[in-house]
Amino acid sequence: MAAPANHPELSTFKARFRYSFSFYGFVDFVAILPFLLIYLYWNTEVSHLIILPYIFKLIRYSKSFRLIGDVLHKAESKLVTVYTTCGIMVCFSTHINVLHRAWCTTRGFCQYR
Image 1: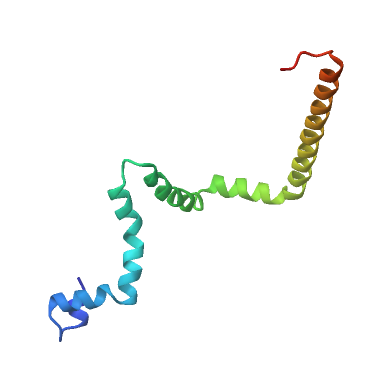
Image 2: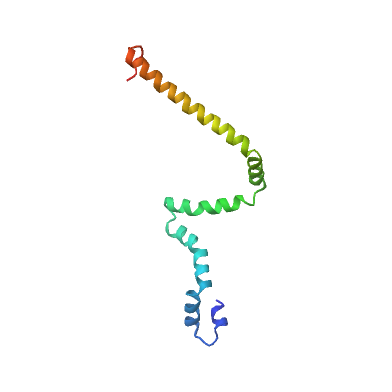
């Protein structure tokens, strides 16, 4: 709407056309592009993928989510240790289960099929 005022020497159509292909016109287009895509693909999974970043953007302003993020950041080293230990235990128990199953089936003790 302000393009004709910025370029009074041009006609209204030419001023708006010039603005639409300028840098700021491109920025405005990129800003409204997600809303256009939601409008076009409102009944598909694409709309959920477009809305998801806006939800994450809103999480930034929530005190409770910031508190959870701060706690996770402070306990990061402990969490890494716990998850690493759990991963090693899962891998080790899986390996023992595979070896046990192989040992049982070769000796005829178990009926795994």
